[in-house]
Image (cartoon, rainbow, N blue to C red; front, side, top):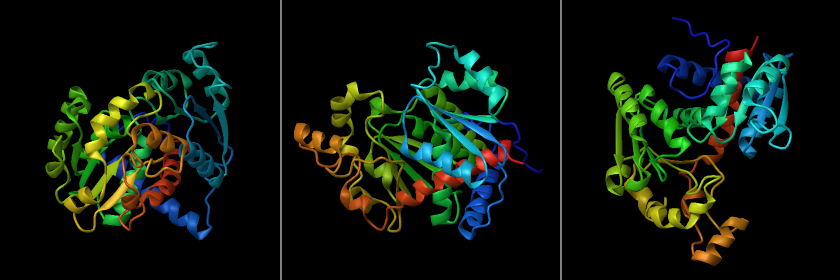
Length: 330
């Protein structure tokens, strides 16, 4: 059956089938090849796209802007200083205003309820660029990167290391089982995934001959892994838990010893930014205060031949472009 995503939101993978996710990945590859050959299709010509950002982001903003421009569209960036959702105007009213002016709306911020309210009232497709619960556009780029480097998704052993409750882990839990993957969440027990989400993911895994493992044991999580994936230990808005997270997650740093447990040709993913040295203000401050020069991943692994993090970052453009073309394109 042909896949038609016109007019659809992308808030999480909950309402997307395996076939629909595969369709987006195939379209991403097609658009990527066209981009590299200089043959743009301009499928977003005449389309105006609102980019709402409560949380700043280099990759999400640049990916949406580049993707829109590549296809002939216009993207308007609106920061929290430009638009104050729920402060001077309700989310409901904002959605109805923007829906009259734009063909699609991207939201990146805190509460997942904000993006669901935008979708409920805007009357145009709304895409989740990150909320406290999910990060589906990132997961699409992750899947595309794995597919390019490993040739498939089904049966791939993907271990996500770190905070097992964060938005990236949640989107992997929703999406990876639908793609038939062997997903492992390697995390300290206080940071294990939400039980309700995990239960739904396990049901999805059963239907798709996929597997899910939640563990705090490094060997169980990493043994023979095809992909090791990590993220920052402290997400934006959680800075108050910085010291606590360092103590919890230091044993789960992705380093040469952990990499040696995986398959010899394992790839390393990170959604960036990464604290792998002292070349940032946060990195230097952490070193001065805690004596830790590298956090979630070491410089050795980050700069190794296993690391494909910049392929992964580039793929944000192609997968986001696919989402926009599929949902509002000509």
